[in-house]
Image (tube, rainbow, N blue to C red; front, side, top):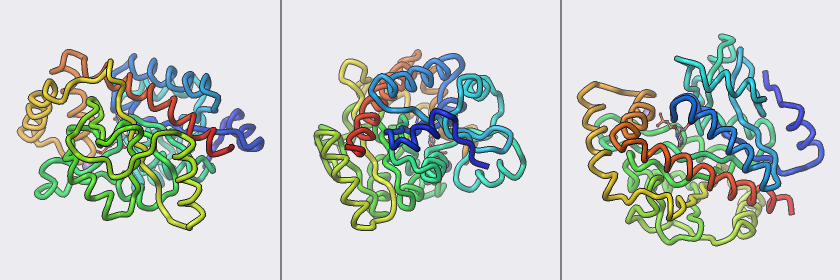
Amino acid sequence: MLVAGDAIEEARARGRPIVALETTIVTHGMPYPQNLETARNVERIVRESGAIPATIGVLDGNIHVGLDDAQLERLARAKNVRKLSRADLPYALAAGIDGSTTVAATMICAHLAGIEVFVTGGIGGVHRGAEKTFDVSADLEELARTAVTVVCAGAKAILDLAKTLEALETRGVPVICYGTDEFPAFWSRSSGLPAPLRLDSSAEIARFIAIKRDLGLAGGTVVANPIPQSKEIPANDLRPHIEAVIEEARARDIAGKDVTPYLLERLAALSGGRSLAANVALIENNARLGAEIAIALRA
Ligand code: PSU
Ligand code: MN
């Protein structure tokens, strides 16, 4: 049911730092071939930073922790592959199908494999208009339950970021903003929302995680790492496009699991590829920090 690649088995046996990576960003977050290039680059950055990458996905009903390159390519090229969150994971295993894991499902699989640190682009959150649609990502519930540290660039600015932070606070999920007093807004460094917590080094973050664990506090930690200044899209440039794509999704009755992939794809089109380029840059930046934290946790 759970298959760990050879490199991961060995890393685990030796107590080496491992960084989990998700695959919904590959199958539903970016088009081919940028998705495959980015996934490979992120693995390379984790390795060059001194940790071992474990990209997680489901193939033929097996959870793979540490997909090999051919397996990664299979998911990256797949059309109509399923996006798996907590509720879908046992379904995919029972049905023997392929699927990509969201932040929530990747946290579950990483935890099963004993991996403490996970790098992604942005967590899911509370969608705008959630008071009507009730669309709140299962990622938030997972963060409340499962003890994995998720390194991201904040939550995607297509969401209601203020409500997302409120929901995380209610669930007791620490949101550590790395080197900034503001919660980062994925493509932009600034959201106008104050950082719930701030730490400035991976050593301090590792200490925080260790203390949280020793206190027996359940659940994960969000580490929000702002996109590098040179790669960010100013919030004002993106705002009209975000509003346009949300309106488009509403008019077309896009709902449920399809909302986030639809918004990301349309935003990339309307921004002339700028949002995609920023998305690539921020994940690579997160990979470096995630590796540092995984290493600091072993020190
Ligand atoms: N980060 C990205 N692109 C993505 C995602 C994260 O840069 O596509 C994915 C993650 O897998 C996350 C999902 O769990 O979007 C959120 O989907 P939803 O809003 O349906 O919960
Ligand atoms: Mn949703």
